[in-house]
Amino acid sequence: QVQLVESGGGSVQAGGSLRLSCAASRYTYSIKRYGWFRQPPGKEREGVAAIFTSGGSTYYADSVKGRFTVSQANAKNTVYLQMNSLKPEDTAMYYCAAGPEYGYSLRSQNYNYWGQGTQVTVSS
Image (tube, rainbow, N blue to C red; front, top):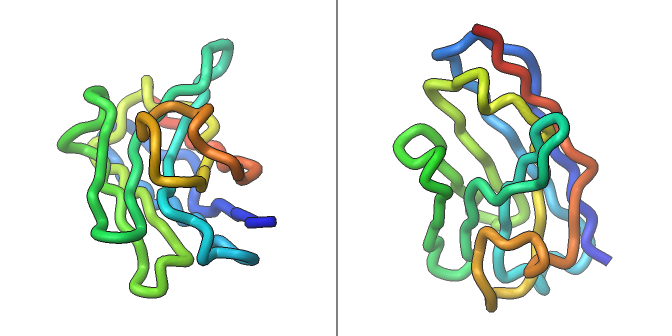
């Protein structure tokens, strides 16, 4: 099955930037959409951004619009989440997900495959 590995998390001060990467392997031809999700401590997982592998359409949660950018490499086996102007409330475990193209893009139930996550901590 598809395997996803995230990297790029870390600690940063408010206003700083980080770029997360998600590398996909095995059966990547089946991936029609990638999503980025996050789960703050003690809270539910929420959708952050998504990108369709064909055409590159993107979607963002209102909380990150204008600050985060999702993109994919030409080979479409790697996706990125560029996070700028980070805020303490962005602190969370960030997960990469992959799946089919149907359903609401920021709904976790619409994704079949998940990475292990990478921690992002933003200090004030």
